[in-house]
Image (cartoon, rainbow, N blue to C red; front, side, top):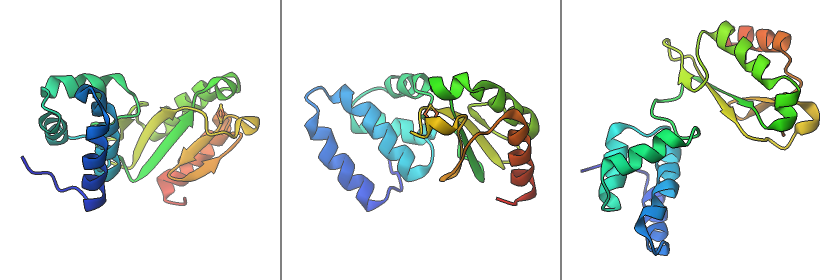
Length: 161
Ligand code: FES
């Protein structure tokens, strides 16, 4: 089975796998490395990881299903991540996320049908004093109340970000 991986990724995998006395423990770090390389974990990627670690694809599939930060779909043009750790949650991150779901027509954990947006929850971005925090790509937006989420969504839809 062939996967088009960057040579740095292959190097990292080759160094990482022998470090784990129990081969199964290498599965999660490998999922992260492949996702970093490919943007998501396709069916082929899951089979490739299983093959590399001498496991069954179902063993990898279970990991991918369990960890919300692992994706099985390509990300949209805009990757929107809402922090849901306690300070952001208390400041209304769930309402902010609901508003983004409505405005962008996508449910959290998924990519919109038009491929414009992937919306996800993430954990603390270390800017808790300005909660709720939302990331769009690598840019951070702070104090994102539901109304400000509407403004943010409009900019995304208009391609103004
Ligand atoms: S809890 Fe959201 S930035 Fe820290």
